[in-house]
Length: 420
Image (cartoon, rainbow, N blue to C red; front, side, top):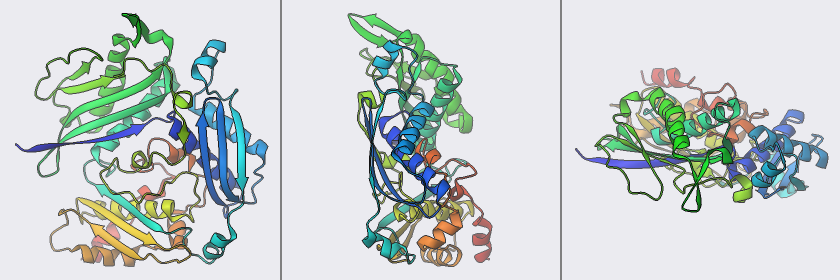
C-alpha cells in the first residue's frame, strides 16, 4: 500500500519566541482593555535577563514604562520562569524578578492612520486559512497533536505532577498517510523539554537526562495525548529511542519516541536562545499543511489584516468543511493598504469538494455570507477585545475557546441551505 509521511511541530509557552509573542500580545490586550480603538504594532526581543519591547502604539490606555515593566514580569511569571534560590536563578538566566525591561515605543505613522481611519486595511498582503476533517477541531492531525503535546506539558509542569519540567519545550509529530490523504497511523514523536538537575545523570563524563524520566514522559504525556482523539492511529507500541545509541528494532506499527534526543536540556528559554515576536508563524497556523501569507500575528491589533484576515480565512474554511461542502478547504484573501475590500478570494479544496459543487460556487457563497472588509471582519469576529495573549501559546487555530470566535461553525447550516 502506498503511503507517505508528513511532520509538524509546535513549541511550548516557554519557548523564547513564544515568550516574546506572549509579551507583545499582553501589551496589545492591555491597550484594548482600556481603549478598544487602540492601534498596536508591538515587537519583543528576549534574551538572557533582558526583554526589549518596541514598536508603534497609538492608544488612550495608560501605557507608561511602569505598565510595560509590570506586564512583562507578569507574563514571565505566568509562564513559569521563576527561581526558588540563587542556583536556580543562575541556571534559568531569565526570571520574572531579575529581567531588565527596556521600552522603546512611539506612536503609529500618520500616513498609515489616514488610510485605516476610513476603514481601509492596515497593510497590504495575502492571508490564508485552512481546515480539514482529520480531527474534531478540523485541523491537520500532525499540528493538532503537536499542540496538544506542549499544552499537556504545561499542565503537567504547572500542576506539579512533573515538578522537574521547566517551561521551554518543543514537540514534533510525524503521521503516516494513505495515498488518498487519510491518516493511517502515528509514525514518530519527538519531544524535547527543559528540565532541572533532579532528573540528570552522568555517563562517560557527560550529563544526560535520565532514561527513567524519558519513560515518564512517554507514559504520562505522550501516550495520553496520542490516545485521546485518535486511538485507532496508535497501532503499535511507543518505543523509546535513546540518544547516542543504536536504535532498537521497531515493529511495523511501533511509534518511535525521541525524548530529549540531544541527551540533555538544562539550559533553555531566552537564556539558551534569543526570542523574537513573530518567528513561529508555521507553528501558529497549520504546521506547514496550508500556505502562510508571511505576516506574523502577535502584537498586532485587528486593523492589521495580517492577523484579522487570517482569522477570517480560518473561519470561512472551517465553516465550509463543517457544512460538508468539502473535506478540506484552503482560502486566500488579499488586501491593499488603506483599501477596504479584498482584492481577491481564492478557494482550493484539493479534489475533496462535494459532488455538484464548484470552487467558483464556494467563492460566491463566501461573498454572500461573510463580511470581508477590515471593519466587517472585526465586527463579525468581535476582535476589539483583550483576547490575544492566549492565542500566543499552543496555536491560534484548533482551540475551541469561547474567545476564539474564528473557531465557530455558526455559518455551516446557512452554507448548506444556500445550496439547497
